[in-house]
Amino acid sequence: MTSSSNQPNATLYLNNLNDKVTTQELKTQLFALFTSYGKIIEIIASKKQGMRGQAFLVFTDLAGATSAMRACEGMMFYDKPIHIDYAKTKSHATSRREDPNFVPPTSVNASSLLTQKRQREDEAVEDERNTKREKSEEDEEEMEIDDDDEPAQKSNTLSSTTGVPNASQQPSTRLLCTNLPQEVTDDILAVLFQQYQGFQSAQVTWSPTPNADGAKVKHAQVLFESQELASVAKTALDGFTLKRGWVMGVAFI
Image 1 (cartoon, one colour):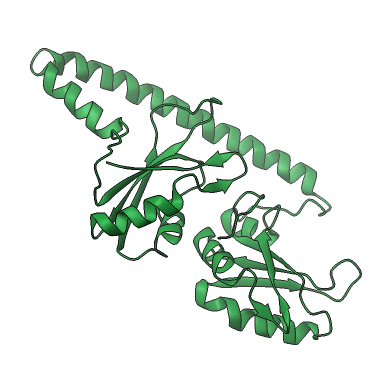
Image 2 (spheres, rainbow, N blue to C red):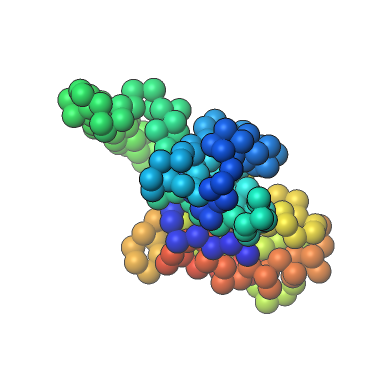
């Protein structure tokens, strides 16, 4: 099973490619090989010094990139096994899709435009904080009124919606995944579990408390068709390293 030392993103870095293949043919064949795993928006390959035998594949989303990496790592391609990893940084194409105002750092006016962008982001964050503060004050007023009528019911609802389910030693069709990094989504976790028979769904949500290092984390519930099939996935993925320093725990619930 593939393990990457770089932070997951939608751009893949490929090396150990056959450098005798022309650039155009390489791009064409890479597109044909990887397009079934997700939409590809850019392929970067060159014969220039330092780029021979390498390429970058830019997918529209992380799920497609992750699926492609896990399926094709080590695959023979023009008589050589492909080595695949997440790229160390996002491609410009991905950054432009995420932010229409993105300016590559090498552009003439990048410094001033990036400063303006940061100012806009700071203003947006401040507006969001003010909105949350106002909403929090409103909620406190509502809770004071409701507490007089049904205090026990309010407490039970809160624990069921924000707490992490308790792990169990008893086999079940549901699995609890803990210590998930912030970038993990339903789709990404589904890519990891769907290789095991009986997978039905994955639901990722924020955990109410940080991990031992103080970092915000997520947890997830994963559903399988039967207890037996869930047990197979649990045994295989409990202790799986999602990225450096992040080991996922898997238990029954």
